[in-house]
Length: 144
Length: 395
Image (cartoon, rainbow over all chains, first blue to last red; front, side, top):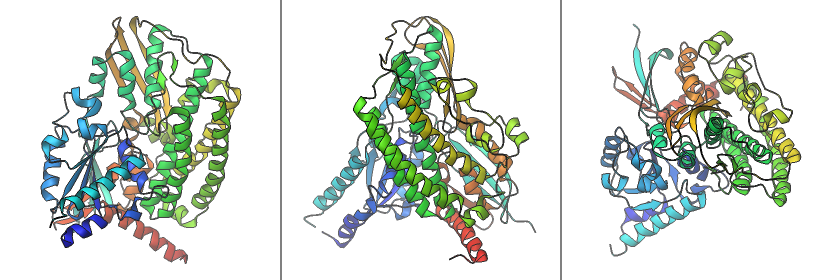
């Protein structure tokens, strides 16, 4: 495992993007950083700029205005980059798939590495999902 | 020479059904103008609702806003009940009130935490969100979910409050009130918070009436308006409680109103649990006739309005929603002009527009190509607090 991946699996910097969600997922993400769940003990923290991020956490069904933003943000991310589709809307567009303003599903816009389903996912599920992602990063780079 | 820069806030505001894009024009430190554009988070909820049947549309409106996921369904089911004059069992009315007040406490705490964060008081942020977990625990016990409660249906509620849960709710509420006393003291007696919030972003009573503001924003400016009292629904006319108002209209008054409202909410929950009669929780309505109806509910941010028109089939032909932030947001223009850019974050937060808006702030100085993101804006705000602390000799 290369140095980069070793460091990456120890301290994941997450950029949180709301591509048209109802904000429940966003509340639960913030909730994970507060005392009861405290994701920072795993070295996971939210960052304000996409250029500092290792993981793009994307909540909400996409829409016509946010699809280009998602593409642009993914291109701007330093690689190796990972994408997590968050919540029912992020994973499958959920209730909003019939709407006239909803875009393609997230995994057709950019490659997605992990899905955290739920409406909204409970903080335990979020922690579980991110731990699985760390496992995946380690697994992917085992031979290197 | 004046040096004007544009500060875009947005572009999309992911937390509300009305996403906003604000462009502040700043001259040095002073905000001189503000421009609004909307439409980034449009999901077509009204149209989706018209393609679903009456039972399904309640789940759609629940997902308009994550924080108001009890107010919107209550307003929606009341609109449908209004069409058909559906009776609601008394026990269900009390359960609706309990659900609504729990939501109010959780929303106000969430707001208090974020306001603390914007001021550089991360302790307040962590405390408020820690104590919010107690309310989330009660929510999970009562409804089965931490968010998106799926509690309301036409003619009643989906889940009953079990007898054994009542004592659990009361102990948790006591525990919470003890912490809230401490939090209230920490926030309202702090000289720095006084210096930082008093006289900032003042919305006069006349302006509050002219902008037709709602909820805590109006009540902090001396407009005595509350749907729960003026147009009683659920069990609010059967219990005693007070509408909290303040005259000052600044961000501090808005904070006081929200904190004191949490005490009222806790008292309402207690009275509801005490007075709640036994009996059915659902009247099992069958058909919705043709007609139109309105439903009102006092969401944590103000009045939430739903209009539903039915043609006798099982789905609405028109579903119109007006959420409180739609009315409260324009007051940002009234309050922010003339203030400094370091106060802009807290003034915007004072309206309680949900935080993601401010998290996506970005300053683009077109002349000097200066880029500032939300962290720098928060840093500016936190530095202002530090300066005040230094002046007061507080470490």
